[in-house]
Image 1: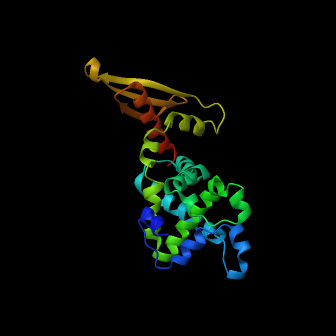
Image 2: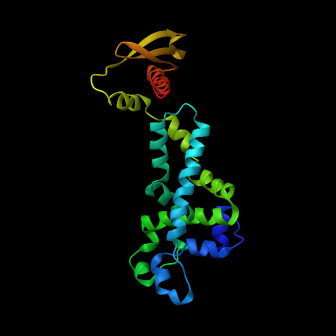
Image 3: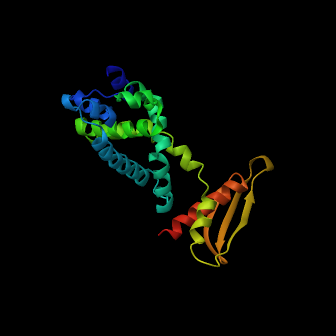
Length: 223
């Protein structure tokens, strides 16, 4: 367990919490007489902690992000594939406590079991050391790539989906200005909704300027 604690950069005061977080229901069922408990309740708590910390991070660090994109980004960060990736980084399968049948059935590499264990560990850290310690682990392993993910977000597609909630909506992008030498031009684009300007953006390429215009439009429409 010391090895896993080092990977998490957290030392448990109550190591029993970590043991429970790693205990699959199959293991607990086979060891009821020993008083073993599975990680399902911790998983439930960890799911909520992960959601709150992620939402708080997005809200505070991306003030221009529309609610719809916040929801989509959070879902991508807390989904099973994302948590499975964290489990692989921690080599979590090595530490899982499984029943004999689950062990033989490949439980140590099963994505759902590994993802559930990540959530359980987050809850265990929360109960042992508080929300700040749990948040440190979430930021280190899950939120570490959110900046690049948001930076590369397709705002034009998001805007198109947003306006299509109503019928007969027409979006149009127009170049307003282009300045500077050919090798270092700066472009200014605006985006029109049914002929009315709803956003303007600047970029070093036409595509970047259009994306920034769409981003600004989403900000205005979300007010």
